Image (tube, rainbow, N blue to C red):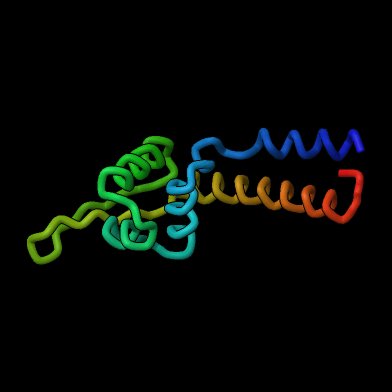
Amino acid sequence: MARELEQTARELQRLDQLLQHRARLGICVLLAGVDRMSFSRLKELLRLTDGNLGAQLRKLEDAGYLSVHKAFIERRPVSWYALTEQGTHALGVHLAGMEMLVKSVERGARGGDG
């Protein structure tokens, strides 16, 4: 039992604090499935305001998790976001940690000692 509790505690420590925010996790999960996505599409899917989405994107970009490409389409500015290799790795580690935590809870719910 003590060993499983220690493992659970280690998994909690592995979680990426940057990805614990719903919007930032959502951004990374959405971008993991595509080559790139526009600001407006992210805003639509996540149902965030311009300001909130912009702030969350900036935090991820500053951490090196996202790259941004700015262009003009029909004279309108468009920002395209993509998950970087570093962001893909961070998301994978974070999700693996979450999966371990879910398994720990499931073991406990079945009457296990974890």
